[in-house]
Image (cartoon, rainbow, N blue to C red; front, side):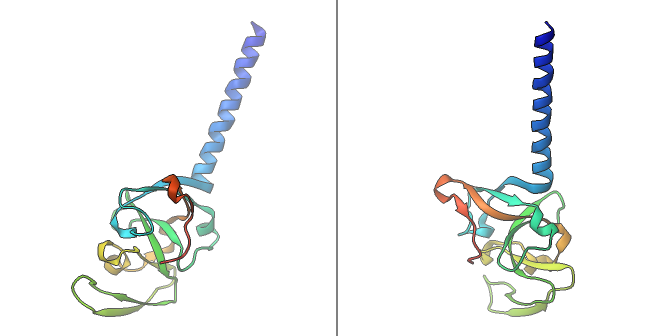
Length: 160
């Protein structure tokens, strides 16, 4: 009886360690997420790709132009957006104001502590063109790998 209690205790400790590892990984290192919608076509599919984003690079200031990031929406804090960084603080960004209806361009200098984000499909994206530069602190993670569908498995580069 004592051996079975000891085995049960050891198994409980092992499960506890595993759950702690999962929590630390999810909270501080890496998380799988679903990236979907028309804003990141052709990089991500309309129906959704399972991607991994890591949380270390934003904390170390290691995100740059061209990186795909997950950002807490400045308009709805319960929502996350997947967009590409097109400008870091101090950069001048020229963008089409309303690409579906005109050729009008504007240039903005990204303010200190902010980034400029846009979807890869400028015709179907709510992004910095509508809500302006996004505070750097809203970056949740840097998307680095697609894991599903398996045919698209691999690193997500900086191509636009």
